[in-house]
Image (cartoon, rainbow, N blue to C red):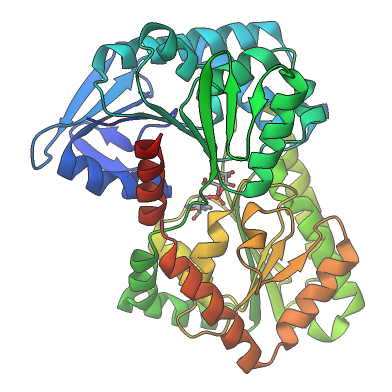
Length: 454
Ligand code: ADQ
């Protein structure tokens, strides 16, 4: 049976009730695991002892393994090394990296815990590891089970070789990943960065078009971009409930045009700079005052990390300043919602919006862009997308902007708001076609096909 491994568990568990955690991965894997059986190994939140949950799968063999981690272990491995080293490093924010040896020690320890557990339960079917929290797992497995097939999907960007080289434990992390048989990224650009990184750090290894040969082991590299569950988003967008929400929202927003931003509250998502662009937009295009509002939805994220609390404070302050500067008794320039929403609620916002303003400073892919496009059943929205989002080369029909160019972003907003209906429809149709073809299910199948080949 296939073994999926991730830091985050697929379900939230309250007593006997399981609910899917937000994010596309669970919905992608669930049908496969229910039908064919499989293991999912992840950190079990709040557990003192490991727990196994056998789901009512058709063949009774879909098993969720919840690993217990001590508080200090989770703190060092997750809040420390994962979020204060790997995350900023790969998004090229070196000044935010805390290269602290204790974090590294916890990271190694927890990665070994995951690997030891996987070694006990995996069979000849592939082990599929997800993301930057678990880079050492392939190596720990390979040492004990040299023939285990291991697939690794990297969800975030891979930085330039120079940036990656600042990591004091660069060799260990790279060797961990190079113990996989297949290492897949969202884009060709990340594959190329990875190859260049290996060349710099292990000049003795052999590097081919789509593979690296290091210490007698071959790792295949592939760009396999993720997708969304397109049909589900489309159905939700067409549902009566969403229709009703949209009508209600329109009245509540006083029929203003709506520009929307939806992100986890994270410094890589460029929320602060986006607000500066909104300010620049209202300063330079005052004709839109009273007619357009910006809605920012931010999901609380990594609240135990100081960096994130500071950013939240700065966003709160900036929004307050802009409200003070522009608001009138009858018009609000900005609405800010700091909370989680259900898919139905999010889709209602996507449908309501005339423009999606997604301006990350660096982003592995960005699923929100696809979710927005899928929700445009009236074919009347415009997507403004940062050139530094992985999906920007996929969505060529979006208005591509540089998030650091405040004036340029403001100009793009004006252009989006003035775009003729026919042009909006044409662009949306092209993008919709692509996301209907490249879904999260085709992503999963492609990964499995590739690992079968190696
Ligand atoms: P994330 O950094 O989390 O993922 P993203 O791809 O945008 O970024 O996914 C965010 C998800 O959270 C979306 O599905 C969105 O709908 C949801 N979401 C956002 N705000 C929400 C809210 N308030 N309530 C509920 N849901 C909300 C990482 C990488 C990305 C990469 C993905 C997948 O950083 O670049 O696209 O993994 O590989």
